[in-house]
Length: 234
Length: 234
DNA sequence: ACCTGAACACCGTTCAAGT
DNA sequence: ACCTGAACACCGTTCAAGT
Image (cartoon, rainbow over all chains, first blue to last red; front, side):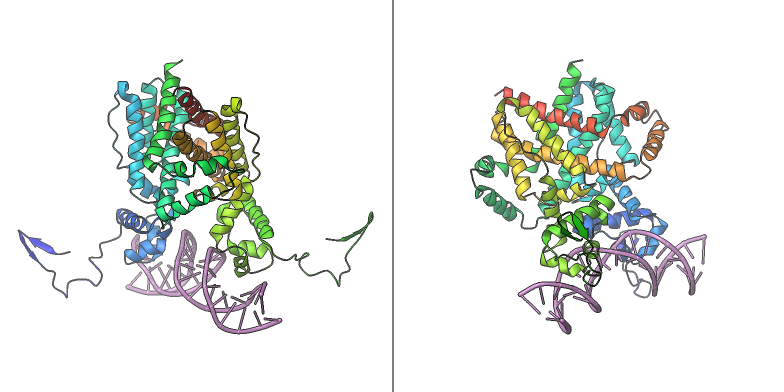
């Protein structure tokens, strides 16, 4: 970092510059930003209290001034990511489309951070941004006339398929070899004894067709269209 | 263990009895049985190579003669559990019911072992028993006339909701306090500002009603009935 | 009052050295 | 040939001791 005077930028004198970066004071926000950078680079397994601390030029113990545990750090990290999902005003006539959009956008927000979504499976989300999303989903379902009991089930299960899809997608991504690995599994399926696994053999190709996006939309459509049908009939 | 002669049981002479139990030789099967016992008692986080080895009276390094990594041990553990799911003959006229039963039974098998299902999210299942289940699901979907492409998506996503539901259920279970904890969250929802969270406040009670079973069946019905509707119309 | 080095009780995995 | 103690490079969390 350097001081700015009008448009002229002068370097900080060397005897003033601290050894490692500007060494701003710690804060929950700085810890979270650093943690997210590590997750983006190395995935959730690469995130440790020690590594976050190291990146901030301090020791792991110092993080416990801002987060009572790694779990709490992850909860807040997740809520920060959820906070990037737009929550538009409810248009009752478009509740089906809006409900789908909400979950497509949630999925996109989570997918932007590797397998961070795994952290969402460890706790009931109660962060402010998660609540905002749940509130929006409930508003849409009730606007569409889905009975409260089913609306309650639906918010739970729709969030579940989003998170599970992202976790699954991150796993496919992390399987390094990537497409190579999938090809080997496809070939294995094709090579199975056809008398025992006729359908697996016949569908070896089909099973690995289709992007993750299409697969997700397929399950989202089944669920939301099913809810719409359920709302249409009393 | 003791020797048996006809109906008379005599104890093994003390100078013949080894110090710690019968100390059978190690085997992959014995390692898996021990690992499953630990998961059942303490959950997946309690399962470590060191603990399994300790329970078998040996060191962690010895397990690597049978499993190249912890990941492989988990894969085989999972396939062993999946092996308890019955796979009946396909009755084409009952494909919808049979498809639901298959996933209800898979869920039950996984739920019997705490959060072991989490291990299913780390790999594409290719164990023999997993393949048997996938084959059966494909057979039912095709018997019902579901187009191959959708059948492929469906086996993936149905397995996904089963695993995710079990993972979610285990998390609720593990939240020690149990019902106590849920009550506190419900109270928190009810206490939110009604102008910002009208639906969350109004539905605080409803949101926590219903057993996990009902919630799962709700999502399973939406998906399978949706598939049936899809098969009925070309 | 705030921060942190070192310690505690763990991990998965490897490998040299033993039987 | 098989097995394993010890080591390596890590964990999350605590706490006494420092500034």
